[in-house]
Length: 144
Image (cartoon, rainbow, N blue to C red):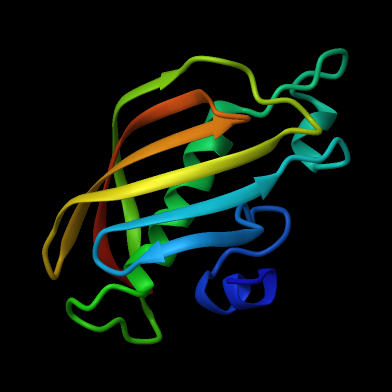
C-alpha cells in the first residue's frame, strides 16, 4: 500500500500518522509496514532536545496503526464508517534499542486471536534487522 492508500484506511492524521507504507499484508494473519523516522518530526522537539529518541508510546502507536490496517483488510464483522478497533491494553512490551532520526522502522504484526469484537496481536518493531521493541496489544471494537 502506498502512503495515500494508508491514509484512506486510517483515521489518524499529522502529526500522529505513523505508517508510511505497507510492504506485505496477508488478510487475517499478518502485516509488515514501514515508518521513516525523520528528525523534523514534532516529538523530537522535546524527546530529547540534545539526543532525539523516538518515544516508546509512538513505537506502540506505529505497531497499533499497522494492526489497524490489518484489521481493515481482515474479513470478520465488517467495519462501519463510525467504527474502529481501539487499543485496549499493552502487554509484555519491551523496548530494546533506541529508534533515532534517520532510521527506517519496520513493524510486523501477527494476529494471535480475533473475534468480531476484539483482537490480540503480537507486534515487533525493527531497524535494519535489529529488534527495537516487541510486545502484545489487545484491541476492542468501538463506535464514535
